Length: 85
Image 1 (tube, one colour):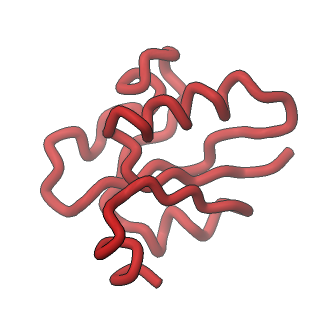
Image 2 (image 1 turned 180 degrees about the horizontal axis):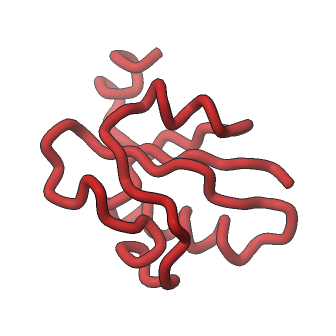
């Protein structure tokens, strides 16, 4: 099983990525990250994406979320990606 973490998880494309990960064999969502202060921090990423509860809360701590993932899919803005590099 490949553990996936998604940044920009509460956005439109983040939700689509979470849906695709949820539907794919051999993949599982291991982390979901949003910017500090985002109103959906703490909510279930699967519920936000429309696939039902996945027991993965959206976090604002990228470093912590990356500890449990094999692959990070970043769907934020270029300046955010560079700041997180």
